[in-house]
Image (tube, rainbow, N blue to C red; front, side):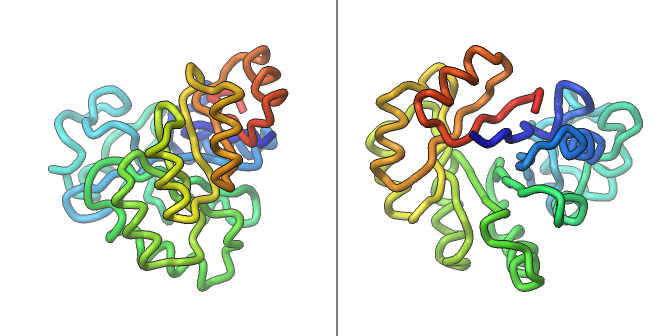
Length: 220
């Protein structure tokens, strides 16, 4: 079962920062998951669409330029990273799951994804996921070889159908809805089941017994 560092080792360093990713790599995480949002003129790595919770800034991410966002403190002096910085740090060290958050991320992310794959990034070590399934459809149309993950709270018929339509590699669901039926549905769709967010060893053992393929954890 894969250990996927949720926003990096986010229990040990500020979430979605290069420091959190470095810590996850030090701990042996084979995958790192980060969130990608669109600023006013480019993409940045941050979970919320507002700045208050994780930075010393205020307001909407979408209304700030990348330079302005990069000038903020994302915790302990860390800056908000760029997606390309995440890929550079992880290359050859761990695989990366980029979660698309908010609108209009997919078209802006495509050039970076194309460049990464063209430069020899292993296709099996790069996955894009989202709760916004039309953005996954846009990625699939543009990059047929890109691994995709369908995010949902609960594995239902719509998620399974979308995963099959996309040829997705993964369906990810919430811990509260991760059971034998969810695992069976994902596997029947030809997907691994990944579960978020798992911070307890008892939960992890239960999920491993169900055949879950990966867990997102703040404590990788």
